[in-house]
Image 1: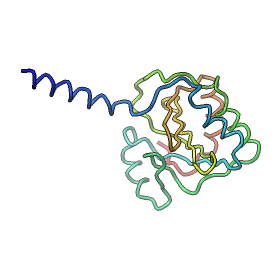
Image 2 (image 1 turned 180 degrees about the vertical axis):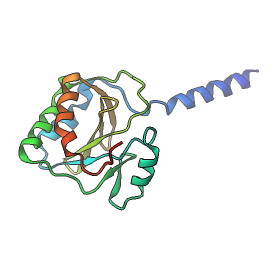
Image 3 (image 1 turned 135 degrees about the vertical axis):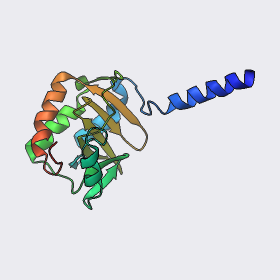
Length: 173
């Protein structure tokens, strides 16, 4: 009986361990990534593929394209987009400001699927901000960590206004 309980407990803990693979720290934990964004010499954008759960046929078709590459376990179109100087600065300010993020609320919206990846360099390392409009969330991905946050309403609105007009490859629903 004791062995059965331990096996059940182990199974539950193991299953739960993968349910939320991202760290959910305070926003201050992302300060090194956000500070690096302000001083990085490069900033590029990558458009995400359709949602594999909600647009399965389109995702399957698009995933086979030669101009698709993986970033942090998600798929994005190539080549990256280099935004104009004005958009570059607006995106940097939006993603660097701590008040634009809140601790991840664990809302269930069908799984995180990024619409955009914003990439910059922190020294020799690449840092990515994966932006999901459907979840209204961002995940900062660096070699050391993944940090998931909710976007505030104003940050969501402003990021959507900056990025949505750049959509060029992803098919309409």
